[in-house]
Length: 237
Image (cartoon, rainbow, N blue to C red; front, side, top):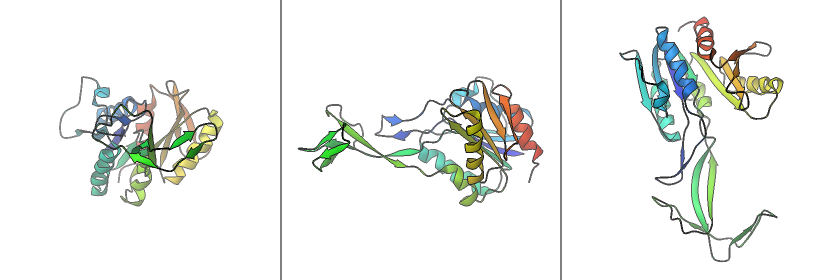
């Protein structure tokens, strides 16, 4: 099989030196990519953390690593690669930004925000966008805008018809509620398989499966092998 794996996290750039990102390191996606290659599959890995692969890297034409940093860079890689039709499976493990920077602003003359009432006095803000935003502002406001869901574009916009694996992370949910949320998310994206976990349990286990009643709890150590078993059982194109 020819497998595309996305791993790591995206950064929403505030200026050329500052960004918003998340805590994820790309180790899970790297482990899945390495296990797939060990089994003889051709692997293309898109990652923001190449170092998560360690030092003993595969070589040869069946192994390719492309690195990205921003949402836009990951989007462009996926947009260019997926419509080619060369992939049999996509494992979308990357922790992609839900929001992107929509500008950064300072307070204008007479403009004031009251945090107790969540209301503004005045109506003027000043655009402070720059290559490096100055550090002398008493207060700055960052505007965030919703990012498109890349996983939802895989089927609809990029016409992928192979095996699609989606990942879902939640915080503070019981395992029972997590599985309900995960299955709804899997169906929404038309994914074949879902890997779901909570932040609290992420170090120890995840749930793998599809359809209510068909998820199994697997240890983090066993996840790459169990996931590849499930992908392989669905066959090639």
